[in-house]
Image (cartoon, rainbow, N blue to C red; front, top):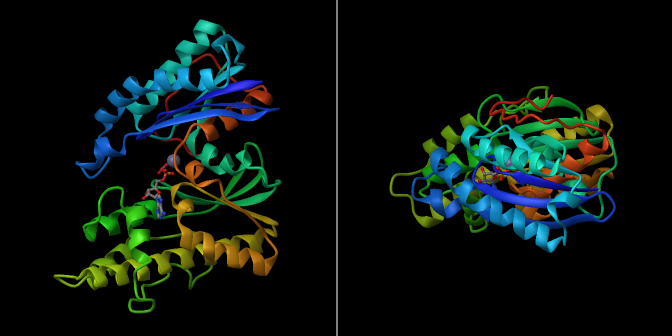
Length: 330
Ligand code: KG4
Ligand code: ZN
C-alpha cells in the first residue's frame, strides 16, 4: 500500500513514499531557506514559484528510488493546510493532477497532524495514548493523542509560537534567518545564570503558554553595543527560560492525564537543550519519550506520506482539491 506524500506548505518542497508493510521507501527535500534569507523571512510569491520549479523532479526522484511507477501507488497525499495559500495550492494541484491521471485516491493531510505523527516513522514508535508537545514556527500545542484522528488540545500559546519567539529574539540579536538554530548554537557559549528571564504562565494552573513577554524581556536586557559574550549569555538565559517553561507544562500535562508517553515534534523539537531537559524528566518519571529524527522534526514529506497512508487505511480520501491556509487540528 505505497502512498506518495507531497509537502509544499511553506518554504520546503518535499516528496516521500510510505508503505504500510515496508515503511518509508524514499524521501527527498529541497529547502528554499537560501532563497528567502536575504529578505529575513519567507516571501510567499517566491515560495510558490519555487515549489512549481522543484516539486516534479522530487516526485520523480522518490518514485525512482522506491522503484515504483505512479500507477503502482495506492494514493496521493498532500499537505492541504495550514500554510501559505499559494504554496499549498502548488502541492495540491500537482497531487490532484497525479491522482486524476492514474485514477488514485487523493488524501488531504493536516500539516500539524504530520508533525504530530512524525515519531511513528521511527523504529521505537510510541503507543497510543500519548501526550504530544508540538513546537514549530507557527504552533505551540499540547495535544492528547488517543489514536489516529483522535486529538484533544489541552494547551496552546496565547500569542507567539515558540519557534517564532526563537526567531524574533534571534533577529533582535542580529542573527541570520531563520534564527532558532543560530540562537541555540550561540546559547551553548553563554554563561549560565548571568541572565534569568521569566518562565511565563508557570506560576498559575493550566497548560497554556505565552512567549511574547519573554521577547520583550530580552529586548530590555540587551545592552546597547552588546558584545558577542553578552549576546551568548542572553541567548543562554532565553533558551533556559523557554525550555524550562515547556518542560514544566509537559510534566503538568502528563500528571493530569496519566499518559505513559511523551512525543515532541515540530522544528523546535530539534533543540538539544529541550531534548536534554525532557530526557531528565522522562527518566525520573518513567515516561517513554519520543522524538522524530532531526530531519523529520522540521518540515518534510515523510510525515505527510505516513499520515496519508494511515488515513487511506481508514478509508478516507476525496477527489476534490482542498487548500486551507487556516485549519484547526481538532
Ligand atoms: O516545524 P518547522 O520546520 O516549520 C513550521 O511548520 O513552522 O519549524 C520551524 C521553526 C523555526 O521557528 C525554527 O527557528 C525553529 O523551528 N527551530 C529551532 C531549532 N531548529 C529549528 N528552534 C530552536 N532550536 C533549534 N535547534
Ligand atoms: Zn511545520
